Image (cartoon, rainbow, N blue to C red):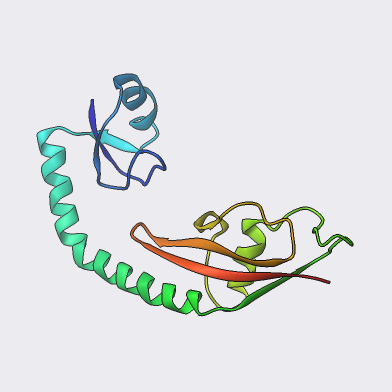
Length: 147
């Protein structure tokens, strides 16, 4: 069953993508929840027109995301946390803590946009990816220090 997504759905596709899903998933979940519409000829034509009209807006959003990525990558973040004698921290550094540290510098980042590679359970320097746009990612480096 072909459907047109009306929202970004992780693991399936982005808004306005035409995807093929199993009929039950489309008919019983995606369409009733307003996440998708049936991909018939009239709906496809309507979505193509919407995409054409919104293309210049999307280009501006992408350009803004590229600019923001450059600013975020230039940040030097330091996160302070409680540390045991062996250099291990109590708990772990989470995406929420990292997003808050970025937001303290004047940027509006949601914790869902931040992906930390591996577990951060020791003191040291680490990297994380921030998804600013579906095609634009920023790598932020942060240092974990003991209090």
